[in-house]
Picture (cartoon, rainbow over the protein chains, first blue to last red):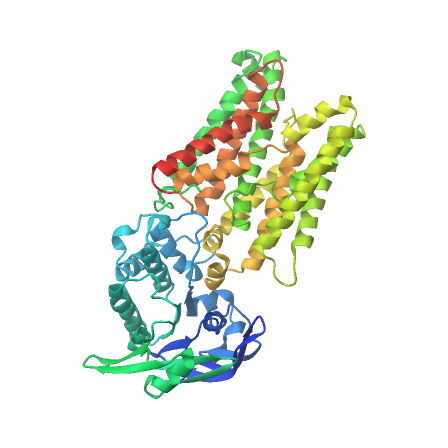
Length: 255
Length: 336
């Protein structure tokens, strides 16, 4: 039963082809990683999947509905995206920032209920920021801000999580434990997680499927077992990749 | 730029707004009782009951009240326009005049003064100039498809600079008899007439609409793409902000000239006091802008009585040190 399907999707950015006639189906509970070189269009693809960019052609079908035809509000209830960078114009508190995730679920004049605040507090607990909810976002470190942005996304409760380099600024512990918890959570809810990551071992640790972008519109997708090979990954990065087998599993490193 | 301790604001909003409301009442009391003539309040009361026609009644109700009311409405408009402009341009230094609305108004008003038009004619000309400038910026800043913040800001700033040059040119070639009136208009001047229902209507409607989309404004300040990803139609929102801020500025400018600093400083003062949630910042800036201008207007006509100073000079005298103090205090707190 496919939850999210790409049908003949073609995406371009400033005359560079990100993907051409790409078709694939993602089932509930699956975790995908998008791998590719710098500038190959991973973030662009993610924004397109979030319905924030119009593809050149093709369709993105979520639950039998074309994503671009959804209303903004219902789209935001189903698809949530973590951007690579976030900006702050005026500093808001951590809790207020996390509560922005409730926006798609509230009517225009409705304020956040205690239930919404409860959800935000649970999300803050997940990212280990529950002690800092009254702090200003500008007073946080880069990693803490990243975790607060993740908490906002958790509070949004989308079916599909699109994470653009979620491990940016995070230390090892949070990369493995917090992201791991978050992803396991979405798996158990039968949601979908799509990750863009440069840490290939972290990507392989979390995902069961890969979407590889080779540039010039070439792409390949499938289960991790068939695609995570020295030859294929070397082609992805245009750099020799080596594989090491240890008692803890298989690891890739640049040769 | 200014930041606050950023407490969760929604719960404290009503208290801060109530304090600002009391401040507004206090400012009106000061404005009505302070002036070059000491007022006997029994005379005012009798005048209100329709008995007799005392001088006190005339001074308070016919001279001071309309000026205070105008000052409050203009201050409220500038405060609100400042908030909207800072969000629209994603720039904490933006003020209501940054996009040249006041410049267009000034050029038209000065031409009207040069032609010897009367107050109503000058206001009318200023309104036409302000709206024309607003549409010019909108049309010129619309690139192909994309309406980028940078392009909008640059177009507005360049046009504002152009209007500034035209203003200097008019001042240079005008006969001396007109120049003093022109300078007063440019620095901002409040007259003895009520603000009028239309302007009050524009202010109240804008505040209500802006308050209704306050949550979307909070999201927009986190970034356009992020707001879009949370379901906000940012294109529509930004066009709406542009025209709402422009209309508010045009109304304020035609009523009282280009009074500086209120629109820049007031939103920051409210944020520093109660945080960045627009459910507080919007109504708070209307109230505080009104309070500030009512007090400035009172000072403008009392400090050098019987001479009157342009109210814009007073707002600058108040605004610059207050703003610098707030910035310093903020840095001392370790948050820049």
